[in-house]
Image (cartoon, rainbow, N blue to C red; front, side, top):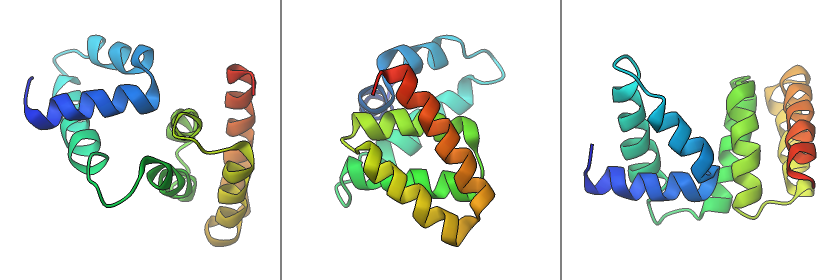
Length: 125
């Protein structure tokens, strides 16, 4: 697929999540998942992440909080890495998860803290 939103989304997605992850996701797509990869890249990344209303750091704050609330550990892991790439510090990520503990529940926050520690270790930070 090639459209303005897809191309824009692919660029942003690579900058936030890393080319290795994004290229693997797209290259490993098959007949069943290809449409989803195209949708996510064009709409989530090109249309929404590409909007001028919020900077990437703010979008990362929001994603970490929402993904914690939804208890989506795989996405939390991915977006902790993206948050670091977008300039968040470990202390800022900690504060997001502490805030989420109050409003989303301690178990969800505990899981996000655990996942973040794994990512920090993998990234050497």
